[in-house]
Length: 186
Image (tube, rainbow, N blue to C red; front, side):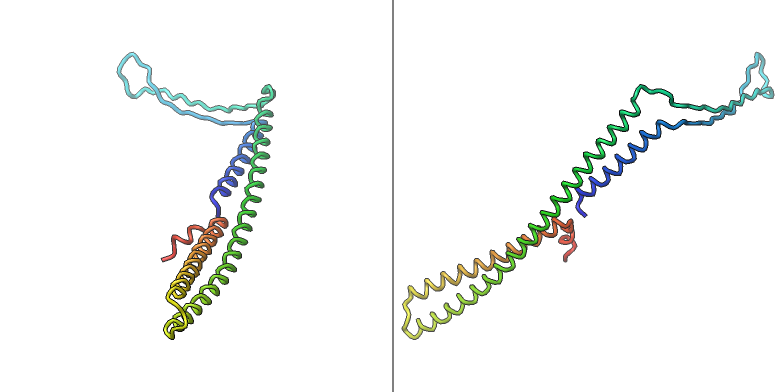
């Protein structure tokens, strides 16, 4: 589904066709042609006197010697095919590595998301306990503000990790060529 890979495959098909076309220059060709005309060559005005001029023929072309031009074209086409096959192989390997990297990045992001969620819940519990202690007079306002800051930081880290997860999910879709899927979501 990846456009660059599909373009390489189409180009490979074109090179195969060019090679076949170059090899076809070795084969003899036979062409038939025909023509049928009417004309009038008169010195006086007479429309009833027409001469027919039919022409029928065959043309045979047998390639005997072309100074190696056909052979050079075939070798050039084959070389282009080999180069393109190497490009396709490298692109395939690159896409596989890109997919593996995207997958592992996504797995790591999901694991960190779980950790950040637990951290956020723990920070929320600590914040709630500190508020209760403050109301009972066992904690100072500075403690409440510090714990509130840590809770907000844990919440922010959790939200950033969600964004990293979505970004890595987009990378997976991109590496598999399914990025258009996002446009179809309503």
